[in-house]
Length: 366
Ligand SMILES: Cc1cc2nc3c(=O)[nH]c(=O)nc-3n(C[C@H](O)[C@H](O)[C@H](O)COP(=O)(O)O)c2cc1C
Image 1 (tube, rainbow, N blue to C red):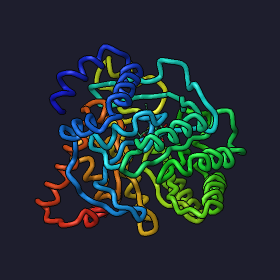
Image 2 (cartoon, protein in one colour):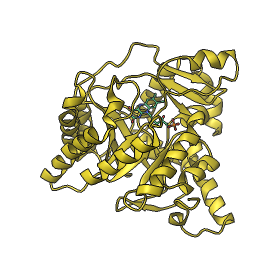
Image 3 (cartoon, rainbow, N blue to C red):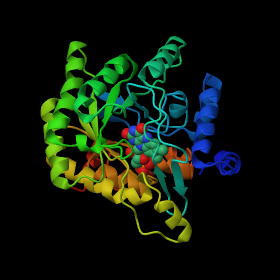
């Protein structure tokens, strides 16, 4: 953990509940990182070395990006490259503004290195986010890394109307991201995960692909899966999504399953309802990355997400088939230095095991 974060930031954040601490961090980063001097300063502390990877016909400086949900309304886009991330995903964004579920709705167990959230896609809605992205670009503050947009289904829209709800948000954001993630796997929007079924998936993906064709565009559309899917369902959905024109998968979103509590304090957190992320999710995420890689890995890239917190966990996600990786929870527990520490560790391990090129380790253990 970086010294400035450990000494100054982490103790102050502990005084707040999880959601307020998060809000405070985003508010600070969104203001502090708007000028190049602050960005350079942060980058001199937290910047990661390069470990290039070519995915979706784009060079990523290294494989590690910021996962969805951290910067829900795309307020702090300039901060993430300054903190070492090579790409980022903002959102989830829905077609209509939403307050999300009642608070408290975000919980942490330090001992388990896990978060539980039932935010419920709180976000200002696509029109407001789009306006702020337009202002950011015209002010010359667009980050110089690939930017992803995470799209969710509006709570007020049922699954029958989901295809047009996703497609409308996708179209409104089309000029404001480099890649798009269709989130059909959050456990916190009623019935959302039922979209992970062949017919629904095909319709949702088709609707977005049609928009892309109308725009004569090529931007990648990626589907994010729940770790709670049975293998058969995962693979049939993946097949259906590929036939409909999907370009990649993320494995995984948060889980509704729970590990065995370590003590009374951790039991109190683990009974909270919502999606669990962080350390206890890692093995399940890697299992799914591997299952996808074995079946569709030749056709589309896989992005690994879930409990990535150090070199070993990043290595297992990549060697089981992930071309890119993302993290959320370990930023909360370890602070931003987790990014450079993972990339330095991956480079060292590649040297020790005599790999010259990052692409050689993708899927190496399968
Ligand atoms: C508070 C919180 C909010 C999240 N919001 C979203 C979201 O809006 N869309 C989404 O696809 N994933 C969301 N996620 C899931 C993360 O993107 C990621 O898939 C999950 O946390 C696993 O990664 P991790 O173990 O590194 O945290 C959220 C996670 C957390 C903890």
